[in-house]
Length: 437
Image 1 (cartoon, rainbow, N blue to C red):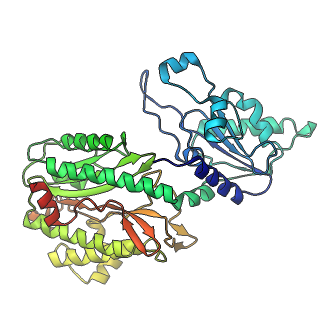
Image 2 (spheres, rainbow, N blue to C red):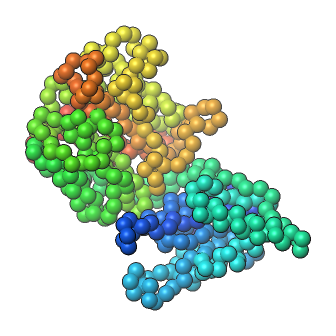
Image 3 (cartoon, rainbow, N blue to C red):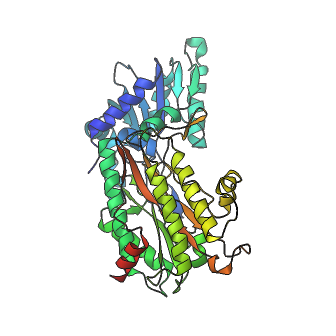
């Protein structure tokens, strides 16, 4: 289950169709990152570079030149080196890039300073995402200055620089059928992992034991890595939104909030579930959980083509604010409480974000002054929550220290939406039944 070379080619063509005549786009790859002394982090390619190429090697540069006679798709990459490959594995090299990845032209990355200025020279516009890498920003400026130093001999430096992100990220926002299949599989693997830990969980285990079970199931499903640092927060730790220490012992009577997703073929899943360590919700936990679940359901109902991005958030806010009033955690008129944002004491984040090659995926949430209209192929999370600080003296003690989030991955379709992670139970009865099994 992979993206085909023909789809990568189509993506490059779609981007070049948006570029101005006589222009060039330059996209650097990710670099290998040092973890400690002489060990490195597992390499993960830059998402934009990968989206356009499928190439997974570091220290490379992708260049698109619409209309170039000798080929529009040019890549600079590391040369093959038998001694290095003995230690680190086989590389594609320039020949392999042309043969296996469809490059029109490929050169050793060691020649980039000699060749790329000549490709930039005479172009009216350079598309490049400035500010991500100061090292590569400086390299771009050095190439332009090299051209400027030769103006007296007729060299023509580029007329202007344009940020590439807006055009490229709009393309990434709409997922193809192949991307949807991969994200569906990422959701299935992640759902299996969440079901696994619900069955596994018992009082007096440590949070990291659940984390280990999650990652075991990810790998069993063919996803070697989590898409982000897994959150396993029990008790008061669930009220810290990005708690990742995962080191506490889980106590009977507490809830545990788990926010974890795998990365499968570079695409992320992002799922949250909250469940009782002992397998049964207390009355207070159940009451707050049902309010969050109502916010989740109200938000899902608004995920459909033609609605705008923020309608799901507005719906979740209304449902959660009303629920908090009914339970006595907020006091007053629901409309007035929403207008004053009083709910943010308990629900302080948006209901979701785009999802794709990045966990918080690219794409504008607003177009001009308006919220973006949803279109088929967009994928987003729906993740309402309630977090009652353990130090919140303004609410009765029975509510304090309860943190709940329910999150799913949702694909916008022609006639509504598809919940890609629907295989994890959400209802109180469903969770308790699975944990009892």
